[in-house]
Image 1 (spheres, one colour):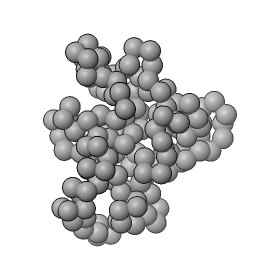
Image 2 (cartoon, one colour):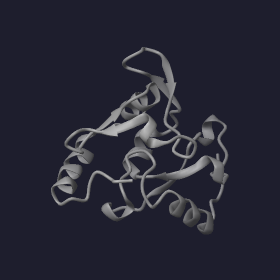
Image 3 (cartoon, rainbow, N blue to C red):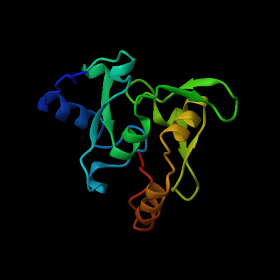
Image 4 (cartoon, rainbow, N blue to C red):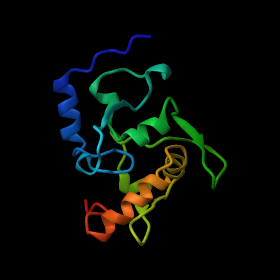
Length: 142
């Protein structure tokens, strides 16, 4: 399957709307050594489109772990739940930062599924976040 082209202008618009940070782990582009991905919230393989309403910014780690997944089993309730949609949902309603600012904690089934499937507290991110916290860059204040 050929991936539809996403124009440079649309990529730039999405990055600006997302505040130049990952919609899932909130890592700013300026903290990474790699460009952010414009990802399909609903993957193409699941019928998602390449239009603005289905696109958002994601760091390479989150996008790589997400892949084509859209749902998972909430480890608390055992129920199927959708992955967080950064375009339609508010981050603060589904997640919060641990007291030390290093880990993302899921508040809702959607939040917990997203933390689990996207590995939002993987060792690479938590090590980096510890350093960011130490210099006062993290967690985000907005």
